[in-house]
Length: 117
Length: 114
Image (cartoon, rainbow over all chains, first blue to last red; front, top):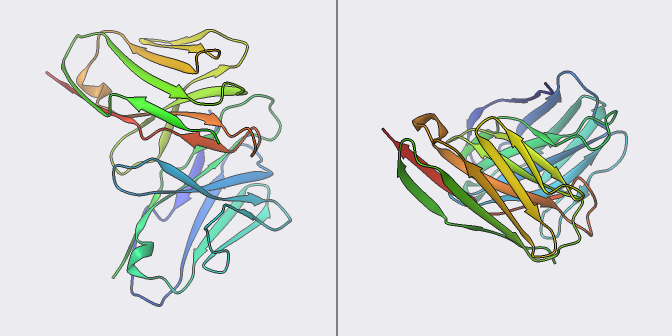
């Protein structure tokens, strides 16, 4: 079945540094990918929609200069948390749908646990 | 604005029980509804996707039903096993955001003990 690979699965960084998270669709193409954030025991909140070859669409309240998204190919989207602060510590999950299949479900990566010290 | 609610928030049962997890949504104009499973510290695994024209979907011991008019879906788990322990999330596409933008419930944390 469709697989979405997310890397790294866990990262610890110091305040002020930047962290890049990759999301790859392994056996399908995705013109659109989605980045979610999840706080402990809370639901997933959509941060932004990543569009291949164009700018990402950010949800209200999400700082686009803080969370840089690049979708350079049909199989790869990256999320860069810039100048990270402890409040950015969270679980980040990407998802994608097979652009070539109608009514296909969204597939999710295994997430990235970011800890900012 | 679409809102998704899941009840109960947590559930602990002995092995072998049949379970019903509930999901409700405020805007009945949905394209579909999807149930996911999330293990601790992991991503989401899609369990069942019900299209708006369907009433239910089945996969193994799982059965999901959809009643659009009442804004409800249930996930039925038959003969529960310890391996079923996880958080179960339901999600519907945001009407304003389109087909792919999902609105999630907060989930039901299920613990099945031997």
